[in-house]
Length: 232
Image 1: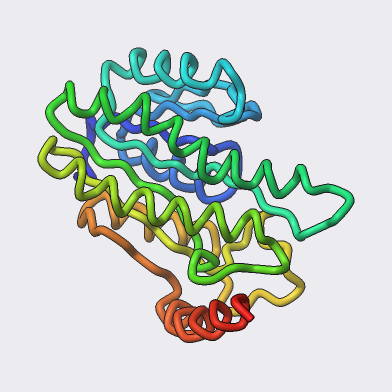
Image 2: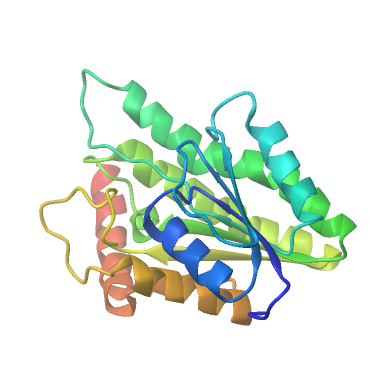
């Protein structure tokens, strides 16, 4: 898969993992369309940037235009994400986490999957989180959105397999981006290392990848305890 001439859309690529991945793909000769609510300073042959908020009314049209300009899409990586700690005076922030992290991904699927099916195949990758393992009192909107994203994409993998479209969920722990707001960030991944993980998924096309592996194991155990405690 990681060869010249491939066409990719990366949603949420003005910074963080999305930007690092975009740089890697462009350097490898891919044609890439980036879609983000912010502009981008990245200029390179084969790269176009499109400004749109995944929660906005114009998003689907902008994304469809980006796909058309590429002449189709082989890979779509949904890297858009927001998250804030719970604040009773700003419940809208929790709603926005759901809108961006989950509904924005679903809106993306509406556009790119039909294009992939029409092109006889493709690969959809969504960046989720190890936070999907259990409810969170600290960031309930974020954890719920990531749990929904993981579940949705895993379900889509089975639904789309007969149509030649593969789906991968990448569950990260802490990555060195503006999203990592916790004062303690164990096993922190660099954005380049995270992008390497995603890039490898484009080659192997697994169902679910969790990194770092040690943190995934810890979170799995902690998630069971958290779910039990949340029901009390």
